Image (cartoon, rainbow, N blue to C red):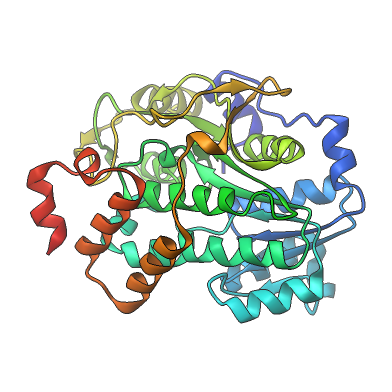
Length: 364
């Protein structure tokens, strides 16, 4: 596991979260519910909510091992029957309704998602069911149960999306903004790769170097935006103060870093030798460089120096019926290729996402 000092040196900036008084006031004594609480980001959001004085935090996840591990980490073996730890699939409307009725949260952080880009290219139905249908289920529960704030955790891959991951997360942003003005203050928070998060690039890199294996990189020029887990979660807390009418907040992650440069910094940090690198080529849906904003979006400043805002009306919209039809197709077993084209058609014209020679391959 990377230390805070190592992360700061790798990213060449201070990565410790700094909270304003508004964030502390917002969380103080509130009941908070975190979906995806067993994951790297969800668990850190939950920890920081407790640190900021939340009165009660509900931890919701469908991964029983991750949820059990979080229980042990936070409270030890004495509270294993704690009702705040809830095993639940966010796509299950009836279970979600029951949990919201019992917990009565005032703030919801929605971090549950499928996020592994290559796997989702092969399994778009799973991405739609969790990232789109799951977000719709949680958003609807927030409105129906009088939740004060709903914060959807998004990704920079939702900006001008080229992958199933990016397209489903863009739709999750649109689902979030679609419930604005119905009594709950809502927003999405978009950020990039997180150093050390489960399933991310960095743990794989560290394992490859430590075991003397060849380090595999997609392209010599590929670059990404990077943050640390505490840094990202801390700025999510700050962005939740700003949440209002379905805006998307984009975190300042510093300059995009070439993956090769990050590897070189890590090699120097751990004193590795005789490093071998193999370039494997960009995978379907991957970009050489990530975007922070869609071409239609205009970045505006906020009261926080590291948070930008995109108003909901710049992101476009998608009808509830279109979301319903897409989720129905995903549940009905529509072919992966056809489902990907339906996704692209909802998010942006297909010609902008798929080259003509790709249409036949994806339509099979």
